[in-house]
Amino acid sequence: KQEVTQIPAALSVPEGENLVLNCSFTDSAIYNLQWFRQDPGKGLTSLLLIQSSQREQTSGRLNASLDKSSGRSTLYIAASQPGDSATYLCAGATDSWGKLQFGAGTQVVVTP
Amino acid sequence: DGGITQSPKYLFRKEGQNVTLSCEQNLNHDAMYWYRQDPGQGLRLIYYSQIVNDFQKGDIAEGYSVSREKKESFPLTVTSAQKNPTAFYLCASRGRKDTQYFGPGTRLTVL
Image (cartoon, rainbow over all chains, first blue to last red; front, side, top):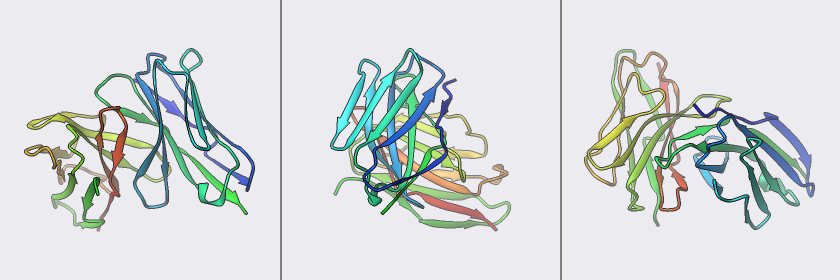
């Protein structure tokens, strides 16, 4: 069974600093990996999805990488803003059925 | 606007009572999912359905039941057999490029 870990559980950065969020997974036969954002008491918003054949995906200030051999994915958020404050979750699927295994998330606070 | 709706937003259950959480989508997606989120934890899969009239157990299906009679709807029933149902419940559907889209969630509390 795929196990997904996110460390640290929380971090705080000043506005303008780049954010680096880490995600590790145990099964290198990963089908895809997704990054989500969750605001308090809300549902999840998809940020980026990386298929197993890809090394990275980019959307605006966001860039996510996938290294299957080391079992790691990293989400970079450039020039952080207070509006980026949220919990970020990564989730891996090991087949095409879409069954996701989630990490516990990293709670991010960007201070003005 | 296309999306996923969940109702109610808040739900209170008495001991021994069954309750049903609603999930509706107008994205024309075949696959739908139910997840449970506990404080400080990631989401865990309860049930999933790839197509109408078919569904499969996820990692924590005990004490829950589902139906999929229509493509748009995937209701979840929390039965009295679920011993610790207090949690945040999230419904999702999956698009063609595998991205999952989530509803706003239902917070269930046992009185």
